[in-house]
Length: 480
Image 1 (tube, rainbow, N blue to C red):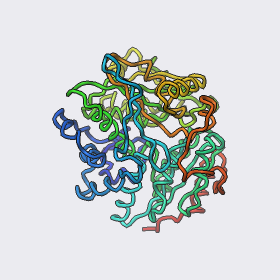
Image 2 (image 1 turned 90 degrees about the vertical axis):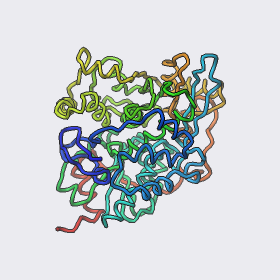
Image 3 (image 1 turned 180 degrees about the horizontal axis):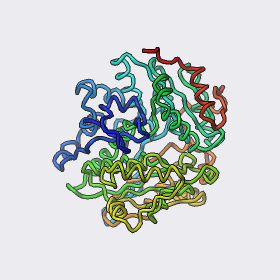
Image 4 (image 1 turned 135 degrees about the horizontal axis):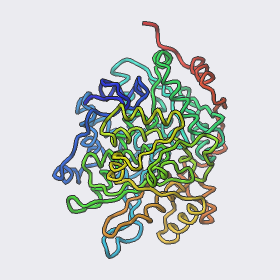
């Protein structure tokens, strides 16, 4: 399998090449030349597989440069009961019974990993495969990432102890929950660097892209990425859509719907990838908070980036994003893999101009893709958390509440609705306490983490300051 850029660059190399490179040289995102499909017979054969072996079947067509035995070993080392605290890895939990129509509301548990967020599902694999590829090539990698709350801790926990990897993680100063900040800033490992940027998540993301756009600097300091711009993240996340669907034991071809809290569009795009591969997904629901640029698009056909000063601070902060990077991958597929069209659209985005598809043939393709959307407010989240707790005895975090709210609004008779869990409630104690009047439990390993010594640095929203930090703290590549 070879990879291409959404903006036209053709041969980006193999999976291992795009794994280490992050953004394509032309600023686009890596995509496979083609998307392989699975048959109903294959799906049925996969039903009894362990999570790790299912991951192999889903991911193998995209990862042809790593020997079969090695890839199986990496996946089996990643998806263990010890790491994810469940033999199922991603348990599918019904909320109530299926009802007379056989539909049912389900919660897909994705937050039992090391950092208590769904990002662990892909990031733990990245930690394993980074180490494998770098060791094979005799190279090092300096990961530069941006986080709105959960990517950072998931990446840092995955890279702890990795001798060939350093992590420089940017986060919006003062815009994460106390637990999220403590998870990252309490890490004292020499290969972890936390930078709190005076701005919002989109500023952090733009700084990462600006450094990646400087090809000489990127090469000199071996800069890579773990944000969902990294194709490996999206591919690994597609696996749990297959796992959830197969856990339902539906008749061949019967659809299931998924509701996905979404800010940067990576998690829900992984679902779209699974659908394009042949998984019988009906609706893919994009659940937004008050920062509803994605809802604006899927409900009205216009995508307009929200500038930093208009990104609201909400009680589901990991979705406080005004520009969804992975949306470019979706536009690329909607355009029929037309990189020229995709570049034109994204140039409009880069110039803060709206991309309006309503009334065009491309809008027909959007509507046919199965995406629907909804938004929620702080009051909606509190009410949903309280209702789920009172009705089903289950505590959920505010992002998951966004997904449950939208999922309930779009339920169809006889069709299961699977709501993706985003994080454990312990990461957002203040909001959960406001909703149900009690503090959610947390794993014992995180007791008192907010009081632990913190190691981080505040920097302005300035690319040169970031480059100066990298140059002062990381070792450059030796000249050829």
